[in-house]
Image (cartoon, rainbow, N blue to C red; front, side, top):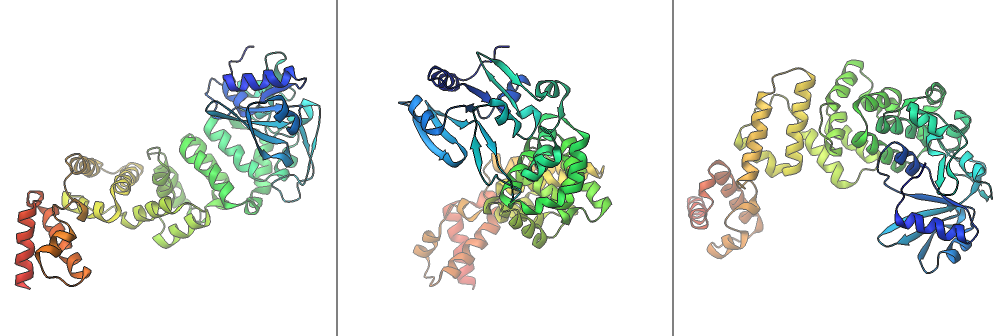
Amino acid sequence: MLIKIPPGAEFIIDKLTRAGFPAYIVGGCVRDVLMGRVPEDWDITTRAYPEEIIKALRPLKVIPTGLKHGTVTVLYDDASYEVTTFRVDGEYTDGRRPDEVTFTEDLKDDLCRRDFTVNAVAYNKTDGLVDYFGGINDIERKLLRCVGNAAERFAEDYLRMLRAYRFAATLGFSLDAEIIAEVSLNKQKLDLISAERITAELNKILLNGSFEGQAAFLDKLGGVIFPEITNDADAFAEVKSVLCFCEKDLSLRLAALLFRNDTNTTSAVLKRLRYDNKTHDEVVNIIKNFDMTVRFDKLKLKKILNKIGKSATYKLIGLSTAVARAREEDLSRFDTARGLFDEITDRQEPYRIKDLAVSGEDIMSCFELKTGKEIGQILELLLDKVQTNPKLNEKEALIEIARGNINGA
């Protein structure tokens, strides 16, 4: 079977081969090609040691990104390729990474250390597909199996348990019975994994996983990663149902997972999982303003837009709609809210102080106000007037309204 690979990967493999070092594309990129998917990354494995890779690939720029583990990054045009020496991993005493690695000249030794059979397939033009563990057959069957013993693979890196559910969710694979059994026995070991690594896998599940795969992940591992949402069976069932009605957006889907919690709990979960401030604040604002009893009119929407911004408001409506669908409630008021949101944003109707036709400097130049607080109060008054009646948003009209308020005071 001839696989088309990028010019950079082909060049690197050819150069290494001509220098006497067999080289192959390996892992997820081979799997994706066999599935008709476009790989995100193209990884290369070779018998050459890092210093031999650097010498063989001159004058390409080679960055020594992980010499201890035999990995360098090769730059070719606008793309980068990780090239790693065939290796055998030593003991994994921390349940994450090998204490040491030993370089080897045997490709099979290298493939033997990988997590799943579908990721342990290599290819080059000379040898074709190299598959020692039945990975190609597993791809055809859409079955995820560990290379060798699942207990050993997971003990090497407990994150592989979560990766198994990520691959199942994103690739549409079933999990081998041995994987399911070992995850049941060892899932609490995920507590040993850093929050950043868990969150990276979680994001891929939420953004790219099927809803069936997301539900399977939550059923099996939700209690470890999100204990806050699994302590009530009925509430947990609703969360999974709401999630399946949400658009493909990380903040919205996180809000769907956490909408039954208060803002303090929501904030604590997101901080524990080390989400960035932007994602944290957006999800918290969605939860803070979520209320299924709210009747969205234009003025109400403008108030919310002013408070939490355009993106969070759009997702707030999306969450409300998803909850209504899960509860089989009437969607008409949320359809109306979406229409009003589009009307406000498309017509650029003012809803923030920055949208006013006057600025704080304009107010200062017209009136003898001594403090920023006084200026802020006038601007808030003008915004309230303009949110109700956008036609008032003209400089002269707003100055007159401000004058009447100041004189009246």
